[in-house]
Length: 262
Image (cartoon, rainbow, N blue to C red):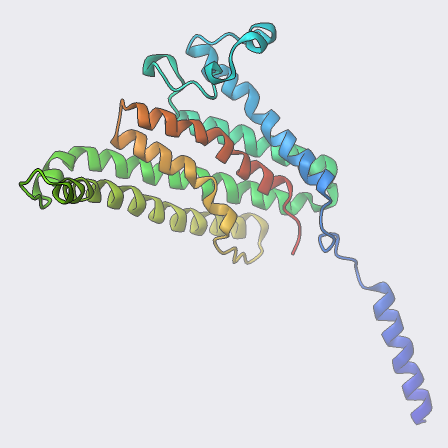
C-alpha cells in the first residue's frame, strides 16, 4: 500500500514537472537581440529629429550631412541659439514617442513571445517616464519663472568682493532653481510611476507593482535639461546641455523592447 502511494506520488510529480508551462521570459535576451532593439529605438527617433532639424534649416541631404563637420550636425550644434533645435516639451515628447515605438516594434520582431510584457512597458515608459514627468517639470518651471525674481531677492547674500562671498552668493542664488528643478522632477517620477501602474492594472486586469528602477532615471535627464533650459531660457549653457537629451531618450525605447515577463 505504502509502495503504491509512493509510486503514484512520484508519477504525479513527474507529470507536473513535465507539463508545467515554460516561462518564455526566464531566458535572458542575447546581446545581439538587445543591440537590435537599441538600433530600432534609434531608428524610431530619426524621422522625428529630422522633422525638427528641417524646421531649423538643417539639410536632410545625406551627401551634405556627410560633408558637414560633426559638431555642426543638428544633434550637436548648440549655437547660434536661433539656429539650433531647442528641446522643449514638444520636441522631447515627439522624440521619446519615436524611441518607444521603435523599441516596441524591434522588441516584438526579435522577441514576439513577450509581446504582452512589452505592451505594458510601452505604457510604463510613455506615461511614467515621459509624459507625466515632463508635464510636472514644465508646470514647475513655469511657476518658478513667475516668482523667480522675488525668490532670488530674498535669498541671503554677503556684500563683499572676496572669493568666499562670491561662491556663497552664487550658491545662494541657485538654491531656488535647484529646488524647483529637483522638486518638480521628483513629483513627476513618483506620479508617473503611480499613473502607469494604475492604467496597466485597468487595461490588463493584473495587479502591477512596478517600482521605480534605476533605468527610469535615465530618460529623466531630458526633464532635468528641459527644466534647466526653461529656468535659464536663452542661455548657451542650456542649449549645450540639451544636446544630451536625444541620447537619454534612447533608454525608454530600449526598456520597452527588452521587457519580458517576470
